[in-house]
Structures are given as C-alpha cells and as structure tokens.
Image (cartoon, rainbow over all chains, first blue to last red; front, side, top):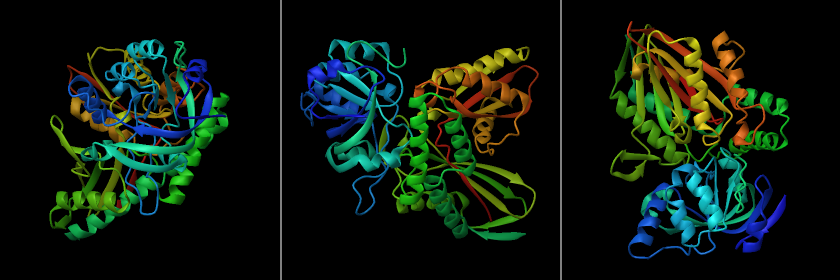
Length: 173
Length: 273
C-alpha cells in the first residue's frame, strides 16, 4: 500500500483512481450526522466553523468510549450516505477528503468531481482493528454531542481504498 | 413457583453485554472463515481477513468489535412458574447501562426520536415471551443501526407468488448495497402481522448459522450471493453469510414479509437462569 500524508496535495488527489489502496498518516477530523447538520448551519448563518474545512479530511465516525490509558475506543466508519445531503456544501467550503463506508448519491459524486475531492472507504465493521492506527485523539468541537462530537485524530498508516475519485471514477460503477 | 431476584437478572445482563460486544459468535466466526477461504476476489479477501483479525483483536484487547455497540435489544423467555423479586424492566435496563459503562461501549440511544437530545445507554428494547417452566432465558442482541436502517416491510396480497416474495427479499439486499457492512446475515419474517413479521425477522438473526437451512433459504442465499455486491461492496462471492426465515400463520387477506439485515458483525449472547 502506498503511503500518503495530510494535507493531501491537489495534484495527488487528482491522480487517485477508484480501487487503489493507500495508507494515510496525519490529521483527520471525525464528524457524523449531527456534527454535519451543525457545520452546515454554521456555514449558512454565522460562518463560525469550529474547524478549518479548507483541505480538511473528514472521517464519518463516532467511536466507543476510551479506556483509561488508551488513545481511542473502537472507531470504524459509519454509513456515508446519511451525510450526502450535507456534503456538497462542505466541499464548496474547502473540504477535500472524506472517509466512510458504502455508496454516495449522484449529487455527491458530481460534487467530488466539481470540487476535485476524493471519497475513501476504510475497513467497515472493523472498529477495534482501526483503533490501532489512531495515535492521538482530542475533542475539538461540539462536545455536547457525546459520541458525535468532532474529534481531531492523528493517524498513522490508516488503511483506505479510493471509492470515488476526482475524475468521476467509482468502485460502485 | 421459583423466585428469581431482579438483581441476579441485572448481573446476568452485564455479563451478556461483555460477551456480545467483545466476542463474535462462534457460528458467525465459522462462516466468516469459510467465506474467506472461498473468496477469489483479492480485495474482498483482504477485507474478510481484516474482519477476522478485527474479531481476534477485539477479543484480545476487550475492545468493542464495532464502534456501533447497537441499540440493545433484549429477548426474554420467562417461565410461567417464575416469580421475579423486583422490577424486571428496571433490572434489565440497569444491567445494560452498567454493562455499557463498565466496558466503555457507546451511548447511542437518544431519548426522543424527534428532538434527539443527549446520547444515553438506555432504554433498551425488551421483548418477552411467556413459556412453560421455571427458568428465564435472556438474549441480548446489540443491533447496529447502519444495517437496521436497511430494514424493509411489504404487505403482499395473499395471492402473491413465491417468486414475487423472493424478488422483494433480494431487492432489499440490493437496496442495502455496500452501505451496511456486507457480507450480511438476512433475517426474514413471513406471516403474522406487520409488527409480528418485523419481530420474527429480527429473531431469525438469533438462530445459529448452520447447514440446516430450508430450500427457500438456500435458494435465496444463492441468489443474493450472485448480486455481486460482495464484502464491503468490493465484489466477490460473499454478499450474505446466511438467510434465516421465520414464519407464522396469518390472515386470509394478507401476507406480510419483513426483512431485517445484520452486518457481518452479528453479535448476540444468551444465558438461562
């Protein structure tokens, strides 16, 4: 597996092809349903985004609680399609990379091409195993959302498969 | 009459939480190993390996198999000669909450489906059956919601043919597609009422996966595995691990069919007191 690091260079993103496998190191942010709803509200109202979206990597994930002495609990991907209605606006505001599981809507596929982003999938239903690749985790926004808070994660060699690429390619056809 | 104290039930539920969340069912592991051996698609095979590694790692580290530790569903078979010392529902919910806290699982329950609110550990959903005898059997099924979201119900006409029903079940799996962590275990309830078919579909997931399947189940499994969805949607021969069907008598005017899909991380545990 080829190693890649955040922030992902635009030329690198453009070169990615659906089906290719990578291992990612660097900074990523968790965000799922309610955090997406709030991010979109923030963009539409106060512009007070709690994280810098420009060039960001968002991982659709809500981990289990962290055991004492550990970095994070079980932390696999959640179903990406629930985030579809929010995704085009986030891409318009600079988001480049998404990690989750499963398919995306036509609109998201088109937006990924338009904004030159990429959608990766990772090992679905393997939350315990994926915890191995997370080296640091910290709540950075929406703490009141509990498991849906936004966490800043430092990952090392996190396994990814390109599911939808910037040229309109998709493993789902 | 035999008396069972509510506190004993709470302790039993705590143990079930641990068992179900950290240790994948042996029948599920067995069929996953078989699927791994049979898979020719390289990428799908790699993911099946990761799924098996994940189960081993979760058991070793006492980490949840999946971060979605589910909406806890508790099935109870209560012997009619049992007297419970205390409040049964309180005892079960206490066991769920204490277990989930003790083992650092996820608080995935919101108290109001519309206003949502703060995530909590309970309430769980409790199904009770009254049976003969003086024992209580408790089964915990922590149901992940990625796959629960793919549930389907169709009220067929009583004149519907078996092919229409098969088509509906296969279509439900196709609609789930790569989203809900295939390879799936497909629970199907046929007959009863709309709600009863739904409960049967869910209970069908509790049946041990084995070679003892009906002709209809075998036929459906074959059809589902020909859809090409495959492990994590990457193709290959493993879209489902099993199809389990439960049936019940129904009304002359109807034929309810409910499909309840489980992800490959099908977790449940039982104990008899």
